[in-house]
Length: 389
Image (cartoon, rainbow, N blue to C red; front, side, top):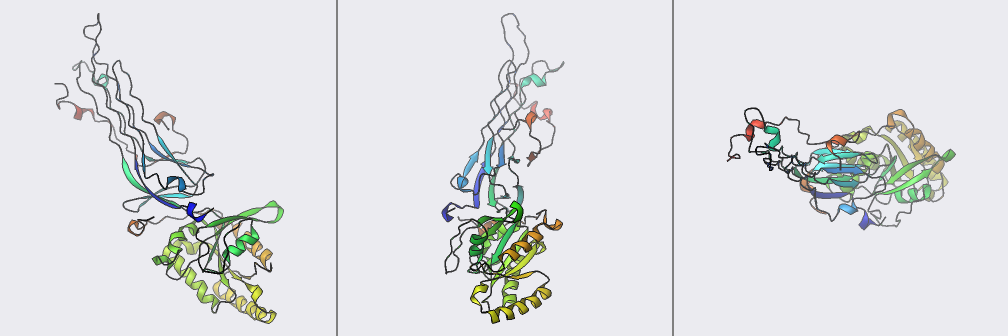
């Protein structure tokens, strides 16, 4: 996918529909001189609904749609006619979309499954017609309820790529080359830093027709968690990965130091990332002589014991160690503790990124409601305020 079409951050203004007003009407007919009240109820306002769609991979369709508003409910009519309900506005988003409050940065909800619906903003309830207020002592009420007001909110949508394995490394560490070798993905590869500007996904084939998804994340540099380079923009995609594969080239002067710098940037961004399974891969081993390779193997064996994680040597060009790398990744992915990817989404700093139909009686199972208001109608406040004059 071209980098210009990969949009993983949008800020939009959403507004639900307001409820329609109830009708104040007294029935009149030729042979019914005192028909009594027959005003109908107003319709409810439309909801703002998020719906997961597995066929979407980007938020590009929302980039230029800055205002999303549902329609208002219709007014009630005579003869107890109900007002029309407002039309719901359904916003389709890719699976893995996280929603934040656009003004405070507070985490609101996330959409992780295809078809999952989240009612982000509920439409206002319609007002009751004067037919509801009739009683033995008040047989001709000349007032009705107004509809509930709408809800409005600035929303930030962030896409966090869903993948099993995430590649973490400095620019030109060999991440894109590895992904192009083990999968059919064709990321851009060149000999200059920051070749990869957007995350790339690839399906890695394994034995017996099995497979797993690997994500190539743009290169991270020291200070990425503070906004340097491209790291801050794409570090969020690492949160969804079950296993993190750190890549350090064999030509590096200090492999342990580079690994700890990368690990430190992830910890500053979100400390929970340290709880994920990690592997360290030493790439570009094809440039070493056999003697240097033997020395490096002894060094990484000692490093593996010191760090307490698997360290593997491989070369994407010659194919050396690729099968062993796949085996190690598959083993980690199938461990029970790595099956469920749950991570709490910390609030975001909104000041750092200023760039760039479900009727109530037909709610779908599993629908989540935000801004739910559980209160009874207080009818007394609508009496004696001049509506019956």
